[in-house]
Image 1 (cartoon, helix red, strand yellow):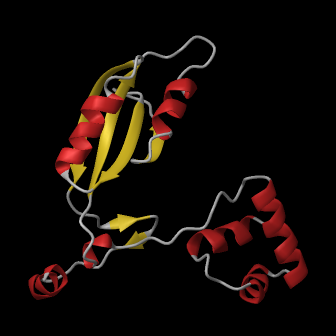
Image 2 (tube, rainbow, N blue to C red):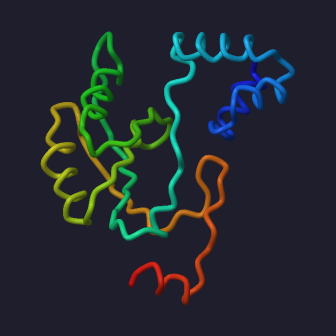
Image 3 (cartoon, rainbow, N blue to C red):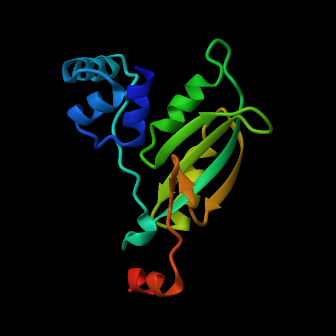
Length: 159
């Protein structure tokens, strides 16, 4: 069954017959397993990974290091839940090391991201410090390599 999850993680567009054949299962077993994974929230959703740099969409992505004061009985969970409620937030991770949470956000402009950090994130009661890093270029995400555009190709995309 782990193999079925790996197949789905690598390519969620595979059909049930394809998944069944690759996993060595029947189609009925495959459908039942996927339904159970979805019910148990092992499979949380299906998502395409888009190379937005190849489109006309303007966007800025930032990785924000966040230091927080953990809450008695809840640790970091309550703060993380408050943070991930914002629409701008794509991901939140509990970290080890110099800071507590990593928050990944997207906005249309640098100013939009800065406004989120200064007016929403850093004003939360338990947030004690933030450090924002802007993602300049993606090379690989979720095991997928982003093709490097040559200068001529970049001109065509931006025009």
